[in-house]
Amino acid sequence: MTEKNVGILAIEVYTPKTFISQSNLEKHNGVSKGKFTIGLGQDAIGLVNGDSEDVNSLALTVVHNLLEKYSIDPNTVGRLEIGTETLIDKSKSTKTVLMSLFGSNTDIEGV
Image 1 (cartoon, one colour):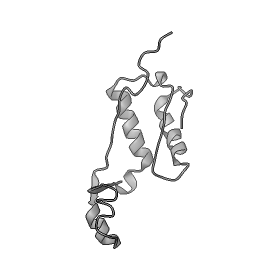
Image 2 (cartoon, rainbow, N blue to C red; image 1 turned 90 degrees about the horizontal axis):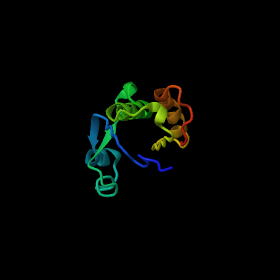
Image 3 (cartoon, helix red, strand yellow; image 1 turned 180 degrees about the vertical axis):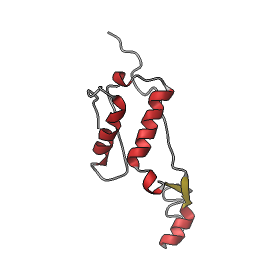
Image 4 (cartoon, rainbow, N blue to C red; image 1 turned 90 degrees about the vertical axis):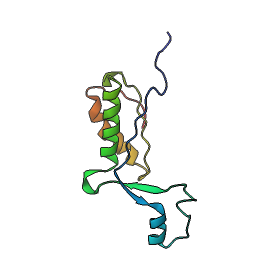
């Protein structure tokens, strides 16, 4: 049996609407000029909007958009990988939150 549609078939990105300049952050934090702009290669950093956004709401937005935009049947998803820059186990709880988008499909591999 040959499987179709294996691999990365679509990608979605969400960036917070609030940004601050990395050079201003360097000044504010009293670190050497270029630590963030040259060292990290960033001009700005996105910030979540207070209580209305967090890692889970960002992930819910992205996965929901993927399912809708590409007409993906949640019952056909077999693997879901989550990566965050938050606490070590946060990706596990984020996957738990995202599972609400997959209805009765509880047989999804990954972290």
